Length: 564
Image (cartoon, rainbow, N blue to C red; front, side, top):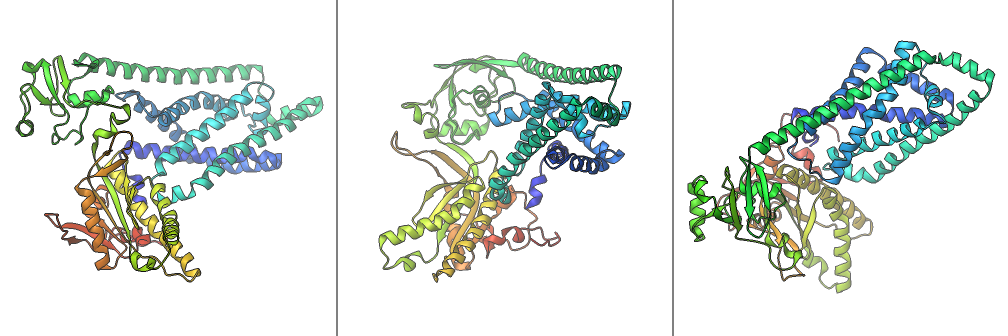
């Protein structure tokens, strides 16, 4: 399923490729500095090897083209955003990305530019002594850290839905901490050594000659180039801000004012539905179906401005008629205000704050995994309750990390089984996370059974069904003790689909909606219809005899086979 990592717009793919180029360069650059712990000869030899790749036409084009492309995409993304609201992790990555060029331009000026224009021998030792005993050494050390953290965050956001990444994350985290520490240790070691050399007048003259140290005039030109390059970046950043503000003002000129009874007054862009306006301005607005015009829980009473609204569509009128809505009642997900409105939200949060949103529910299209252990009753017959509980906990300890590692959560435990949900921003991400989890559970089960066999115990057999459909998430129960759970037809379908695994003697059945959402419509043959009790139409799915081999089974039919 590696092909799913590259799905997305060309802009996203270009950002990934340019980011990988820069991250690879940064990795070897940090390792180069860290070689100062070994010797100056090792540091110089490593640098010479790097420059074979980076200081030719192809390498330079890739490196500097990747840098300009990555920065350009970041500025374009900022300029075209509708809002600057983002999660703290996204904000941190953006801030780090904008701080890096300011320091990196200085670094490039006194190394590559100085080498090309003034024939400076820009060995690592030259750069280190240039910074030593002044604040530049701390600025450049901070640059190392900013580049590394920014790159690691980008890798994590890209690969976090893959099973191998989550399994390797503890090891990768240790490496991510070790590499900048190694580089900083090399910097300090070589810094002390080269500064001691410059403390000896005779050795200092030899070092200056060896490095072809720039004279005062050359340094003035280098500082001028650095300032000029940084000013260009500041100008591009200012242009980005201007574009963002102009776009925002243009949207505001085409805006409309909405007043909520017992609520705030907002100004939002025309063309949006009232429900979208509420969400964009953080106004609590119930909508169980997610704005599809089915549940009618987003309905509002128009207290002013109803006569200037467009008439309801046939579907909206039918929904309002079905609930006996009062006159001047409209669905917030269907109306698009173009003139000022005063509205009253029919369904508002009541009672304790803990029930304000989650207790109202939210309809989402998510992947769900239903799992059941085969022959549990016969296996535990005659055992003490303590032994039964102990065995179940061992079983769940073995398989549940594969679910949580893929981004899923166990919604509820059902004796010897469980129901898991993959609550992600989109159905595509949810389906992919579910597939990774199902394969991970299969691999975890094999390891668990190997342990049981070594202790002369019978292996465990399971049945799983992975399905994607509309579910309602919400807190269901009495106030202050209502757990968050999921309900809906999709849950029942997954349960009944799981029962089919027993008759077919397979570990897993993946429904067609999961494959479609995950972009695996060209998966190999084997799709078959399942007639499920209580489900009007047959549901297509692929039986998987061994869940741990899911990736191989879903490989496109025309794809070349590869060793795992």
